[in-house]
Length: 367
Image (tube, rainbow, N blue to C red; front, side, top):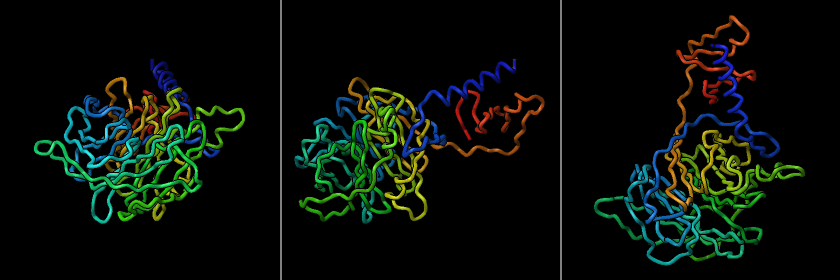
């Protein structure tokens, strides 16, 4: 019986390793990051207030709430909890601004908390009017101020190549006080650009700075499957302390080829240098999320995603970092060759694969 259980456990390991395709990125097949656990913490069931969510940001002024924006014609944002079952605040703009909003980030500048909205969607690459909308984040008081009006500001920009680009991802770095914008390209290279945040740009058009390509070129060569490359970037965020970076994509044609890429910045490293290094795809995310266009950090150990689904109420997913696995008191049964792959850690059974990785009996890699 125990040989049957061991065989099933090893089978789970093989299945877990093969169920999701591996991402080829800058010529390397990337190793999964297995440090995260995913759960559905809520469902956005206030669709009458906002539809097709394409950007989210955790509130820093009123912790416990998540700001959400739509890429439809609703020129406002709402706040809700991670359960998504109640609108806590609605923020309207005091003047009309370009509406094709595609992503949102929060950040601190000169001691104040701001929200940044990417008004830069351009699917057909024909518009050419791009800007980052920004305003000071308002406090959330669901009992006394369910609606708030703010005066939006804009950073209007063009690209250094003089071309028009479609965009769906924006992130702000508190360390550098820098805004990063990432183009969304179908089956081709997505590019990262940057602009320092300042409050005095006024109405003058700025030119972004090119940072780098996101590594997909090597997966678009002769005989490759372009749908497996990291293209169609839809969201990004940097943790509040600037230490961790997330960039995600989606692929509505093949569900398995959706990734969240993860970077940990080294001491003194810029965001530009960090994203030029090889990332790790977060394995816990490797699932289908229709029109997954929103991601945000709560803190170093927690982030959220939700989707642009307009055919129902999209789930809100919460990802939490695993506690480091205790490895003391390890006992391995060495009586028989096959049983050498069984490992007991704190009275729990794990299976060590032939390549040395440690898995739970249901096939999750933990080391």
